[in-house]
Image 1 (cartoon, rainbow, N blue to C red):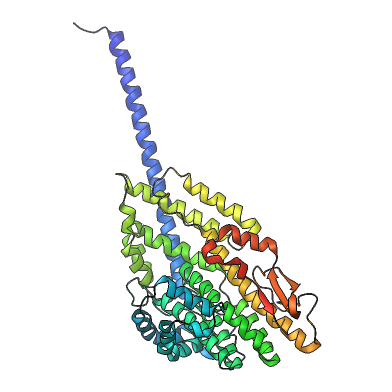
Image 2 (cartoon, helix red, strand yellow):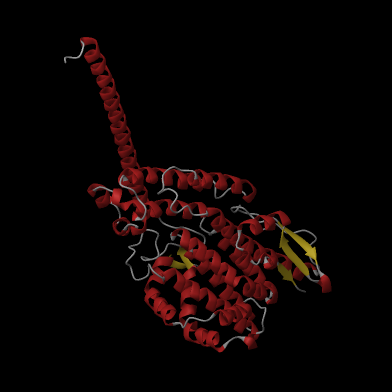
Amino acid sequence: MEQPAETRSTGQTILLVVAGTLLLLLLLLAGAYWRLTRRSHEAVDALVAEAQELAQRRWPRPSHMDTPTPGTFAQAIGPLMPELLRLHKAEPKLDEPLSTKCREVRDGKRPLAELPGECREALERGRSLMQRALLTSRTEEAGPPEGLQTLSDPKHPSADSGLIALQHIHKLAALDIRFQLEAGQTEAALETCLDGLALARDVGHGTGLVGAMVSAAGHGQLFHPCAEALRRASPTGQKKATAALRRIREGLNPFELAMREESIAGPLMAFGRLFDHDQLAALPAGAKATALQGTPELDVQIPVFGTPLMRHALLAFRRFEQQQVTVVELPPSARGARLQALHKSMEDSWNPIVKLAIPDFGKFAARVDQQRARLDLLLALALVKQHRAESGAWPTSLPPLYPERPVLLPTALKLQPDEAGTLRVVPEKAHLEHLKAVLDPETARLDELLVTATP
């Protein structure tokens, strides 16, 4: 039986409306995907340009020496890297009790006589190479060798453990300072200290977030031995140390630059599959190798629409990291809430890839705070010792730490007269409270972030 014309007309109208709605929805989706693709392509273009710029960057910084060695840190340390890697890989792994004992001797909590034989033998094996490595810090410029650079080929021999091999040198230098002091070689101990601090400084240039953390750890390992060397140094040695410490502090790589490097290297590793042929070809060799290696872990739990999700995640991560770069060098009191808000915005994302790995850069920034505080404390110790040598009494207020050129986020310090005529130099409480809130209490050892000047 034939349907009435009105019924047929109504059905056709409904069908047209549904079809039109679906077509409009498909057009909107196609437009959104086209826009997402275009924006992610532009983001990759920007990444390529930043990688090219980073590959050409130089790393000027003041030498801690009055007469620096010509050339760059890369030119000096590069030839030593194969030896440094062999030394590090040949070292037997210490169990926790032995490792703790060695650290306590380095920090002065135990006498040198209690140093475990394993650490004593490690120093004997590595002393000559360690001394040669320390001298590489005296160059005119910083800049890492191939393999340690942020955009090095991940398969380079130094890429896997080159920075850790240099961290081993920091530990050996800290132990050697203890032996030099025990032998009455005060000026040699001070020289080892300053070269060691300068080496750790140079490790943080051009090596990204990992290099920044190894640099900070190196200053942590050298802090207590250096403080003892400064306490025992002659007035001439303390004056020399004052100039060198100011230059080392001024020459630290700003954490903002390390974060900028990370904002390039991270997306290259995670989103390299989104690069087209021309974009890959335009990358520097090491950056291209990084992008091609990719991050297989990101394949886990990615649904069918993986490519659009990856494109959106790239844009989200780029925005997140670029916003963090503008925040990490703020004073600690202003930085924490801003970083926490950025972190939460990523956690609240609808995109599951965005939630896979959101690093807590606040903790890394706090470790750099601690690194700067240690250098400021060592400089303050040298200054108050100089004051006593010249006047016969401790100063009642702290002399200016950096009267000539300002440095990033100088630590607020105060003097506390202590028993037996000694003087303690400590960070102000507010700064300590900030560090306590964000650092791992097992490794921060905030109660030790102070120095004591003895007559």
